[in-house]
Length: 115
Ligand code: HEC
Image 1 (tube, helix red, strand yellow):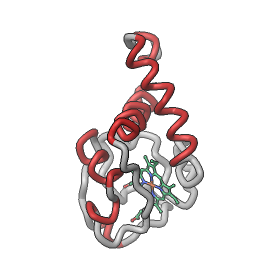
Image 2 (image 1 turned 180 degrees about the horizontal axis):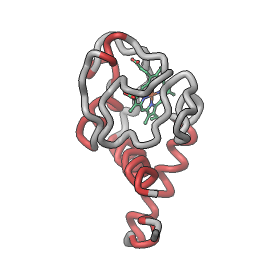
Image 3 (image 1 turned 90 degrees about the vertical axis):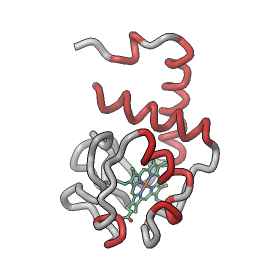
């Protein structure tokens, strides 16, 4: 299997690297990308296409479990921009107000899923 990242044009690769760094800094304390490794938040392996609140063994708020959101670029973007506005009652309180940083993080999550 060829890693998707190798085929990306350089601008996208730079964004991917940026996304990885941002993910470590802003999300990694609470989220792992290893399946089954739930921290304060659920693991985010395969999060693209996943329904909200569906990781077994993760501690979710009732709000997120019942939200029925399918995570893809658009829904992740609005959730990460303002989690409690998108899902009132969610226990994830920290957002990423900067749109470029959100795009980089989401790009990284998309790439991480393809590997
Ligand atoms: C302080 C801890 C913390 C940080 C930092 C954090 N999260 Fe979360 N995240 C959570 C918790 C807790 C939940 C579960 C929320 C709930 O159940 O309402 C969650 C839920 C999520 C979900 C929904 C997952 C699912 O299975 O439905 C996504 C997607 C997500 N976080 C992405 C991110 C990203 C991307 C970042 C970094 C920009 C981030 N989170 C930073 C704690 C955190």
